[in-house]
Length: 62
Image (cartoon, rainbow, N blue to C red; front, side, top):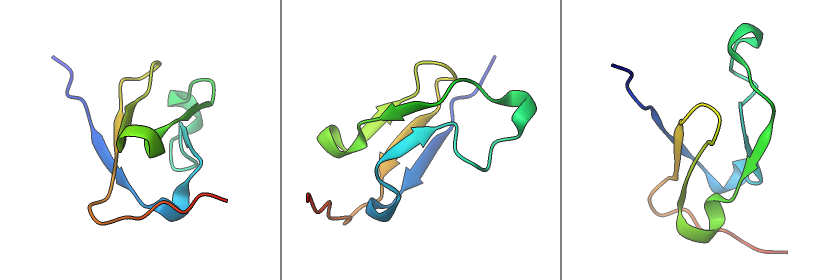
């Protein structure tokens, strides 16, 4: 049984992609940008890792 990780990210990290630079090369997959700004959370279609915007974060659009 696999466990799904939820990683909190800050607004400063947007635009965000999975895998992040902290992932080991051997467990990497193609880079995919995730739209966390729209709903406050997103799931990677490759590895299933869930990302959530930290509570209280404000996204400033340019």
